[in-house]
Length: 156
Image 1 (cartoon, rainbow, N blue to C red):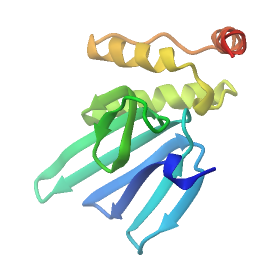
Image 2: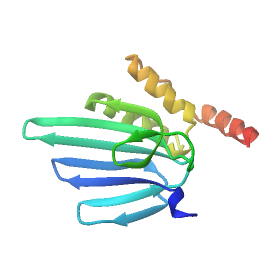
Image 3: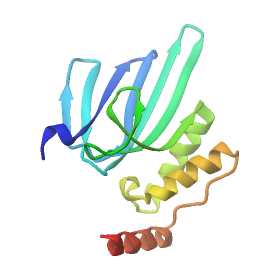
Image 4: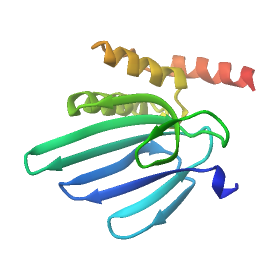
């Protein structure tokens, strides 16, 4: 696959200051820049969860999770710090209690034997909307996943 089709995410790890990581996603390429920085790349249409946390001398200044669909060159996209060129942002949650809730939701999906990379795009939007309204998102079950896989196969 041509490298310029990939979506690149710069990850930084400075312990207790800046930490960013990929919670899930199928990494197509990885480049280590130095001890603290690396760049991971994703193929078009793949999903990934990008978590960012930063603190200063007084405590946490940002905690955020974004679930993003990597886009094809020429497709519309939203910009996102550390993500080049950007992506289709399916979920954007800030604040540690809400981020932690999304992480628990991902854990529950994986505990059900479903790879979070394969979850229906609409489900991540549902989670984002429910959380922004202060409500619990519906569980993503094996039955929902099977229905999504069948729908996707019909669309192809």
